[in-house]
Length: 606
Image (cartoon, rainbow, N blue to C red; front, side, top):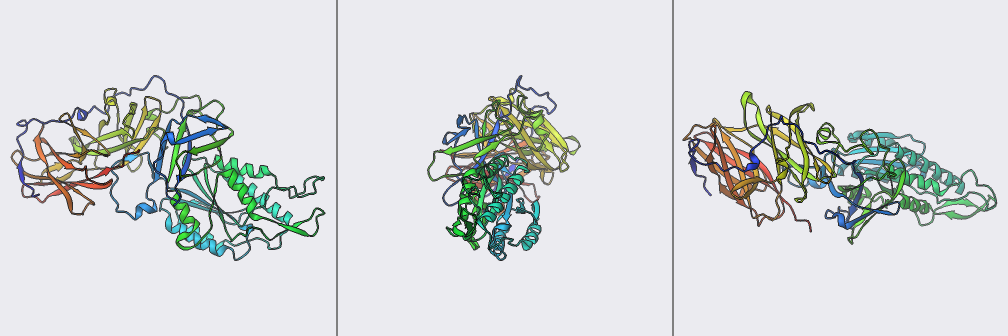
């Protein structure tokens, strides 16, 4: 379609229909907090994967059951959290995110490579190094990797994004095992390894996101007395409690546990075991038996090391691209000790990855019986709150006095049935200083999309929205926004808002599913009455891709020399995915400028 020039109407000569949702309140209003806020919910994280190693992304709360110490607990919310910048995303065209969401984390994975270097002899580390290179190539730049050797140390690199440090440490890693160890030696070494592993896991800060543990070992002994039945246990007794301690420590660390044999393990090992008198060799210990014990207490997965495109680390990276966070109500006895954890999913073809034990820290000043944090308190921290799934975005609206720009903040719950009881938003600059804020009033919270306004100088900011719903669940969402106005000639152009037409009014929307049409909404100011303006709306697969849909923008006059342009794009036949919406505007003889916005069409959850 050819763009046609449009003459701007004189201000006041045409009626401007704007949704009541855009009648914005001042950012100086006082917060209206609920009279009482519940204690914070407790969270449980786990991964759900299909047979090919890809995350199962369609679980709902009714598909999952959780038992703590054998007692069923109600799931208050279930949120799928995806890793931003994953390897899979790097292979796709990169479009700006249409909104921020607590369904995506930008913190990256925390992958711990723990090597039992006394379980294999010199030379066994070569295949390990080759496979680790696959890991370094597959992870995102924001993923952190740690490398340590146990039980006696020697190699220790704290979690880092510096791949060179990991490669340098890998080059120094060698097998320290003894090919002639006895059964007692085997048991002693296994016990020391388990103790070191439990100690390391307990020293980790308990995160919300899973800690990815890749434990590389050449085998572990099964529990044994190391003495004749009628005598006291020997010095190399290996008790079942040693394994249970690792299981509890894995629950403390929220460990998503993988065991990767550093060398090929035969079904029966070659470790010599003494007879009942302590002399001679009457059989052999199976190094797989101890691994099976460890898998049982940690909820882990055994993966063959492999090489090339089929290494264990490729599988680990694929399986950890997303995880679920389930929230449950706290009980008095939950905190401060380890609990048996049983997570079950009813969908077939789905395997769970997560610990068999969980420990929630003792309550502190803002936990336990204390109230959950308010929206203002959630704005003041970088912690992520996921009990309440929500989306948020920010848009440059128009220029105000002294060069500041009015910024619209829009938030909506992922579940349309959810109602907010409190919500606040703030803009933070590159130094983390608050540049503007806004608190929703009761009338704002009645709308499906909550909209507020604040002002900020041009620049790069992070928007944070914090909300509580009517059931007491808390959530935050962050979104990076460049506060600026596009310009052609004297005409200044806002960001593109996307939404729907409801009752003759424009209603903003951050995500679309089955809607047949999307409305593009653009504000303009600074052109003289009667100026010729070309305005077109386009939809394309990328910022510079050819347009697949084109529609004119109808321009209406508003107050104070401002104008609004709106156009409709049919999206009913589009497959799910991300697309670019371009508003192309030209003023008189000046070259056209364009404003871009990503449109996301999502699959309806069944």
